Image: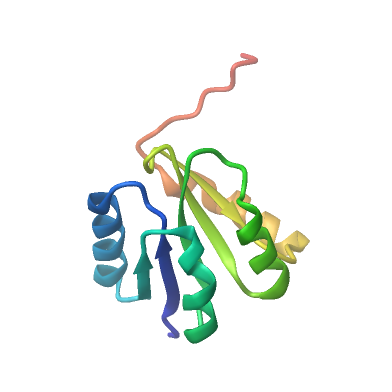
Length: 122
């Protein structure tokens, strides 16, 4: 199976960046191609190394314009935003089709099994 090439960028704390890098390496499925502390360094890394996923530290869920531009130029680039020091996650995908949406919806219940979701309408 092909390893996913991941760039870790702009995580607010080095400890969080190290945790993400260790998780990726331990999985055996993810190759961390680089780790940069500034969003400004992302284009340089992407120009020199193939990247499938950008793992990005974010203060809120609004994708920075630099990342929007990168997604527009690199069709296969996916972005995973770690929001609020990693307490929330936002995923940005390009060219999402019906099958992709269904796969994501089906995967959600398996992501955090210890949590239960209650319907507030009942």
